[in-house]
Length: 335
Ligand code: UT7
Image (cartoon, rainbow, N blue to C red; front, side):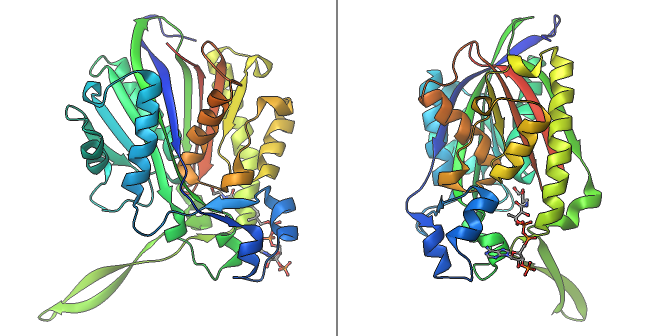
């Protein structure tokens, strides 16, 4: 339900960036012991996109951001805030200011936010708070990841799942009491952190005289697929139901469910639990694989581009992933 005392927050533009080239299931079967017959029925994925080595997550993020700004009809200089949701930053001190510089968003304060595949949902929720308090008027949220640089390409249990991509939305503060973002439900449970990780391992080395100083090394993605699957099919419908209840919207009134694109079987299980029609649930993972936090805005951008979702429509975005983290946002699209 719109809050009658605070400015509303509208989602007014979306964009996506997907690199070339494609890596198909057949290509993968020449790299590891796998096959299209294994991957497709278990995941719904046929191919994924891989960012060429000369490009970075910043290039991908900036491309998606420009598309979102174009659609919103907003100039980069008009942005007050830029959040980059990523787990594959080029600089662990933060990559958002580089995206800000690439766009020429000179007035925007820019910082990173990391919540794995839930990063986009958490970042939209965070940006919305700045707009609701009246501190800022226009924000850009970009989710971008290059997980092809984070997987172990000899581990068939993970390397077949992920792809590279970016998606972005523009948020704008509106009138008090108007429809925009209608509810937000966010969750974390660190007890499940071992189920899915992209860890910085620390090793102690004698570096400064007799003082032992720790040094970081990176580990590739490690995942307990079965347990993450069980978590997702339980937690995602629950959090969506909570968000719908809080918004006072029945599940059938929603035109588009934009759920993190990890596995078609998870999307189907969530749809079944919430008794949704297939045509209400966006699915783009066949062509892109799991693009982490970017998967929700990529799906939203496709649906809007195809005219399947548009101004005045009700949507739900729901993310889940490492942390563990998960969350859902109910919104009415457009100004
Ligand atoms: O955004 C991140 C969130 N992550 C997820 O949502 C992942 C959720 N989990 C899943 O989507 C599924 O668990 C997977 C698709 C990852 C795996 O499907 P599964 O039906 O749970 O398979 P499994 O891990 O139980 O493995 C079954 C078998 C194993 O062989 P054995 O032990 O039965 O002989 C695996 O070694 O399949 C084998 N296997 C493969 N075989 C061919 C695992 N990966 C592959 C592969 N190709 N790529």
